[in-house]
Amino acid sequence: MLHRKHQGHVVVRSVASHFSLAPSPCRPGRGRGPRASGTLTGNNCQNRRARAFSHSSFAYPTTRRPTPPVRHHKVAVAGGRGPQDYRTSHVTWFLQLPLHVRPVQPGPPVRRGWRQLRPAIPLLFVFLPPPTSRRSERCTSGRAKREGKEVRRRGRGEEPGKMQYKNLGRSGLRVSQLSYGAWVTFGNQLDVKEAKALLQACRDAGVNFFDNAEVYANGRAEEIMGQAIRDLGWRRSDVVISTKLFWGGQGPNDKGLSRKHIVEGLKGSLKRLDMDYVDVVYCHRPDASTPIEETVRAMNWVIDQGWAFYWGTSEWSAQQITEAWAVANRLDLVGPIVEQPEYNLFSRHKVESEFLPLYSTYGIGLTTWSPLASGVLTGKYGKGNIPADSRFALDNYKNLANRSLVDETLRKVNGLKPIAAELGVSLAQLSIAWCASNPNVSSVITGATKESQIVENMKALEVIPLLTPEVIDRIEAVVQSRPKRTESYR
Ligand SMILES: NC(=O)c1ccc[n+]([C@@H]2O[C@H](COP(=O)([O-])OP(=O)(O)OC[C@H]3O[C@@H](n4cnc5c(N)ncnc54)[C@H](OP(=O)(O)O)[C@@H]3O)[C@@H](O)[C@H]2O)c1
Image: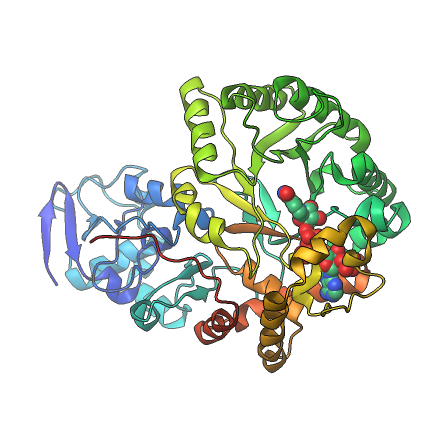
């Protein structure tokens, strides 16, 4: 162990790591080993930066992790009498003990008291549990890294099976890991009475995020959700409500992302929902016929009016999102904080490949849709076997049924069934858990027409810890949908 005086500090090498003492966020990802990063004084920019990083999954995206930059740990001893310097942790004091450090230039007399108990502090470490500081993340490390496998780790405070609340991208908005959306169901299959029961079942499971769109059942879905929430007497601030704008009607200005439609569309949605604001408003699709600058300005305008708190995109390309951020940065406006793409065992390219740079560069969060591929990944459909009470039995969704229920898809679904059975879970739970275990996914938007489906689907949270690298590999062997790695010539 080396130490030397340096600008009023004693620099200690390789001690903290031995005790795993460095404050957690300073040790991003795999910060174990002889170079635990961050200084221990607690009063320096390293720790401040680490705190700023520590609030969501994007902090340490799987692709780019901040490299631990600091190799030395400074222990404040001399000149360390100021209030900042006494923001040292017990760790610092503990480190002084074996070093027999004395102040270089003793300052005013130190107040005695409980500090005399300092020699007993090492005993704390005998009783303290090892730090469980790692954020929830799917990371590659150790053997798994060598084998190129992904391992999901649990973060501080995460209880398996309990609903987690994740920051929506780099924003401060926290959304439940599983959420619920109104597409197809509200207005086409269910009305207010049933909707109330379903929404309450979601709330009982800890869901706080509910998704909608102006186009769902031509606006009826928003009316149903609004009325149901009113009838249930929920506090508005307890839930996160989103809607999406693009298809608002048949007129030439009722569609798209012009300033006119964004302002009029959102006004219409708020009226149908009977709410003063939505938490998130999405551009439901990109609009090639409207300049992105117009859309970015209009989204900022509706936010400034207090009609929405954040804005996002849905099914935009990485390039379009990048362009929106470039415009927002140039105009000193806010960019989209979230993208809503399709993500399930059959549809993965955008989330796992194309969007990778967006997570770290812009802190984009994801609320993903159709985790069950419209119910196909429950295993209830077969060739010519469409349950009468299911989505694919609806007249309007015959086309979707024809596109979805093809031999190859059904073969894969049948291949997944034994994996779910061996784990003792349903295929729906396995499929939803698989989506939710991706750390870049802020919330998986589920759909359901029956309370029993919600009860079943929410139990997917208990399945996440079962997704070991071996299970993930077995799933991959069946679906073979992992996007190819980006070509590299290095
Ligand atoms: N941004 C976009 O462009 C976009 C597009 C689509 C969806 N979304 C959002 O994502 C949400 C979810 O999408 P989704 O409804 O397609 O999700 P999904 O999970 O793929 O499908 C949900 C449907 O599958 C069936 N199902 C669900 N759980 C089941 C279970 N345990 N057993 C048997 N059947 C079950 C139900 O339909 P049946 O009972 O009728 O068969 C349910 O409505 C939508 O509500 C919407 O908010 C967004």
